[in-house]
Length: 277
Image (cartoon, rainbow, N blue to C red; front, side):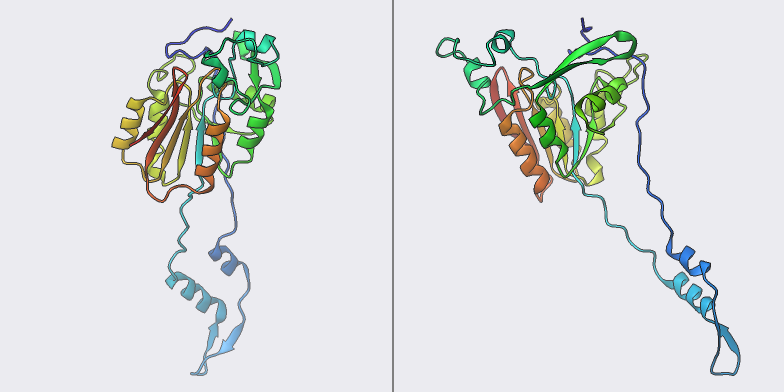
């Protein structure tokens, strides 16, 4: 049985893991110049000059190349209530149908297949000494996330165990270390601080979290004057990211707005809300 955490998430912490990073190396321009042997030619005054020496002098005068800033969209994603679904047990027992519900039941709209990525995958994943937990997800949703032209990073209390999530979902997403898994320090405010720390990178940001994408969080993000647009998505934890929300994420990533606007697409008490800041 999962421990209830201070911020309402379902997975307790355990042994931590270090985030991984990717670095590419290459041969610089000056390395190429110095690796060859220069030939000798006569100059206009009867002396000799090394062509490699002239090349070195030219290279020294040439301004360093400017590297274009990375504007690849960044997706910061939670797991529980976002990918991992918590649907009504009665709906699951009735083959994901709502036919048995009384007219006017608000769950009918929630579980419409035109809105819901019906889960088709489940398994138990290890959380180290804390045991194993059952996770339930839609492979169609994960496929669409996987094909986004963006960098996806975990921002979840599953932080110490995201390697297990990557294996289960067949993804290779890196992890943001936003709290101390041993002491719990940072669990109450760390997610929002992690988002705020990325706002000046100039990269469009999508933040997906079923609990943390609040109106107050939107005010904090706006006050921080982001350098690029921000889309925050707050799913209903019973179904996770909806089809309509995923459509919006894909549109945003494919063509981010030119202005650094902040927009929230959240669900509260089964009602969708759209906030612009």
